[in-house]
Structures are given as C-alpha cells and as structure tokens.
Image 1 (spheres, rainbow, N blue to C red):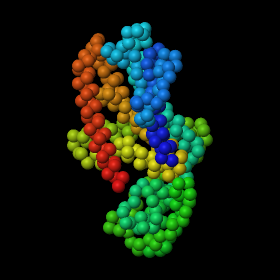
Image 2 (image 1 turned 90 degrees about the vertical axis):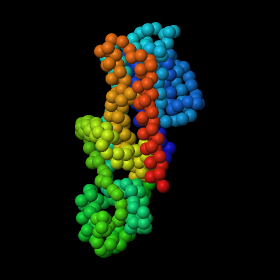
Image 3 (image 1 turned 120 degrees about the vertical axis):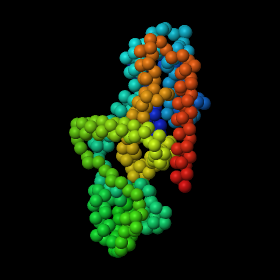
Image 4 (image 1 turned 135 degrees about the vertical axis):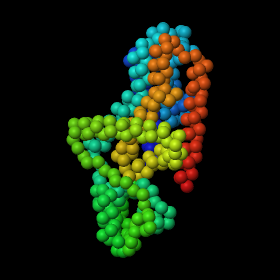
Length: 339
C-alpha cells in the first residue's frame, strides 16, 4: 500500500506537467522532452518530435519546452514552435495547463468518490502517548464505525462513562472489536480516550448528481485554499506559529499512509484534495510557480520586451532559495513528527 500512496502522490504532480504538455501540443509548441521522474535516466525514446523518458528519481516529472525563455530557443526548430513566439493568450494557456488539469483531476476523483460513497465513521488522526486509546490497541488511521458524526460519538462516550464499552474498528480493510472501560469523567482537557479524530464519510449518489455536487465542492475547496494561502502569506509577517501546521512530502506521505489504511477510497479522496490544493498553490504569483510565470509574461506584454536574463536569474534564484529553505525546514519537522 505504501507504493500505491507514493505513486498516487506522484501522479498528482505528473498530471500537472501533462497539462503543460497537452497545451503545448495543442498550440504547436515543441516539447523537447517529457520525463517521468528526474534523472538519472532509466529509459528513453523519441516519438515524433518529443523525447519521452522514465527516470530513477520517480517523483513527479518535467518538461523541456522550446523557447520557454529567449536563451532556450532552439535555432534548428521553426520559429512558430517556440514558446516566446506565441501570442499572449497561448502562452497564458500553456502556463495554466497544469493548474487546469489539476482542477479537473480533483473534480474527477471527487466525482468517483461520491459515486462509490464512503460509510460515515470517525477517523482516528492521532493518539496521545500512553492514553486509554493507546493502551487499548486503537491505532492512528483506524476507523471507528457505527457513528455518523462527532456529536453522536461524543454523546455515546458521555452516556457510557465509567462503563465497559465495545468499539468496532476498521483497520487495513479488516474489522475488529476493541473493549474499553471508559473513565467516570472526562480528563482536564475534555477527553475520554485521548485521540484526535475527524468525521469522515460521503453519501453515495448517482453519476449526474455526483458530477454536479463534486464540481460545487471543488469550487468551494478552491475558494477555501485560496483564502488559506492568503492568510498564510499575512501570517509570515505576523505569526510564525503557522509553521507547525504546514506539511511537506514526508508529511503528505504519512497522511497518505494513514488514509490508505482506511481503504483505497479514502486515498482517492485525499489525492483529490491535494490536486486542488496544488492547483491553488501553483497559481499564486510567486517566481518559479505557474502564477509567477503568468505574471512575468504579463509584465513582458505590457513592457513590450522580455526581462533581461540577469534580472530573471536573480528573481528565480531568490525564489528558489526561499522555497527550498521552507521545504527543508518543513521536511525536518515532518521527520521529527514521525517519531
């Protein structure tokens, strides 16, 4: 299942690159290479005018687009196949291809999840060390069945405090009963079991209803993540505690592993969320992101000429340093949280 999680997370990134690839092909812009993963190369073959490769670092993928910047324009290729020779709207659509297809992927996955349905239950997201749940055998990623929402779960706990109770738990596709004697009162922090949990479950609907509902949910999620990123940008300058809530690839893999233990359908739901999240993140006008590229071509459209190579290198270099530093710090935090 871990391999499936890894491939699923990588698929979200690969699909993003495929969006750029597809738009480039539609508008006749030459794509020199479309690679799955990153070098060193395992296999490669030229089909038509594009070299396709599979690489050892199998996380996401990459494109080499002819003439993405003036200095990368191939002299041996026709001018009309160069990115910088295209009209503004074509450039904008090629750059936006990744975010467009990420939205479509998220929408499609949510539609699939709604068409199949997920039973209502309580998802155990984390457990306090040495808590009652911990010593009783409840594990992170378990589904506590037969509860439709958190209110129903809490009501059951209150009604059975001080009594021996039985919980039906689903783990790795298998159900088991766990007997627990609840304490007579909640702890000082208001808990009985010592778990962090959330409601989970999706009501099964017909295909057309799922299509409309999933589109509406996708748009709501887009709005939510956009607002969240704006809040994040503000908090960079006002409140650094937000850093604890961010996750990188290690944290995403841990989340995927937790979701996959509950079942494949939960992993698909997570991938839908991540695909829409990636779309919003990439659309922000920050250098080296798609939104940053859109801003650059807009400036160049207004300016009437390309930015100098030196200016672009400085901007992208600083942006890369900021993102890499954040990525490195978040990865360290995620690794520490695993233990």
